[in-house]
Length: 407
Image (tube, rainbow, N blue to C red; front, top):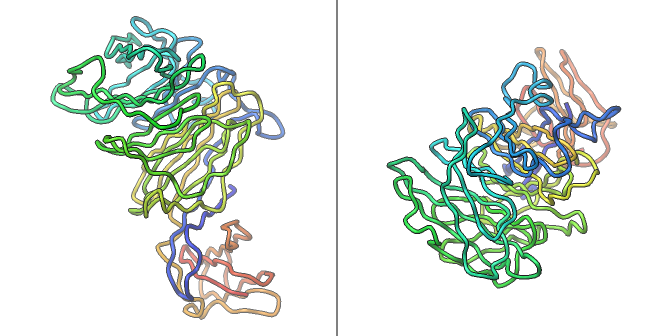
């Protein structure tokens, strides 16, 4: 499998430790798969607008059929699980469905599609019956609601909130972010609990990712991600986002790895991702070197790609991305190493006139990466190992232990 190692911080001094992560593809079913497309037949042009994860299963909202596709990512046969997923047909309150969100206590919520009235329902995971939870029509001229998110425990003893940012509709509105507070499973005020007004309008497919009880990320297909607080203040990312041009789309997620915070942004409409270190805050964000490839190039009129994360352990996270009409893929992201040793600290590694030589006293796995994290060579060897290298800086891993090497 192809690996892409993403370096967060350049070398400061010889022997200084730095952070890095490795991205490895688990599986892909897409229009970009060669020599033959493996894009699932159910993933059509206007479907798969929203995807969430719970207990190893992906839940994907299918707007045109008012149903939810369920993919068991732990299935022994992942091809069958993706190409012929379980289908949960929705009935009752919710029609024209667009969005999904899981509450912390495991309730699946569904949302209406592109309307000035935000309609949110609870979805019975056994029967597919939907029951009204929230129906709100704010003041005139606010635009429309495309997507919403939930945060917290919505049980009879919990607290949380539903939050949604508006989009322009017929040239009007698109400035507002609305929040409805939940206590003990009910909304005290169906109208609105909090309203934040942005100074500039959001674009289409505006979406929100909650961080905690007091803050959230928000972006649209035509606006870069920002970090907002519930008091209405916002923080811009460092100058790390490049223009996506006509193929712009919304799509983002966050995760932690070994106690460090990271941010993911979609690279356009076709399923690529870029990664950012936000451990020092979004105003000091660092864009990582590499990104994942796109899943196709066919029309995605939803102008959105869904990205969800699944924490496996402190140093391992799975990432899933879905690009409507193009494909779906899974990656695992893990810590490349807690630090890089001084290049002279491992006397088994020697510089030669043509590259590198490693002297081994037992069978060992040797990996060589360039400074951008691209895997150059990987071999299990006994005795000695040598490889041609141009002048530059490299990372050598011997049985998982990483060392910086300068040729």
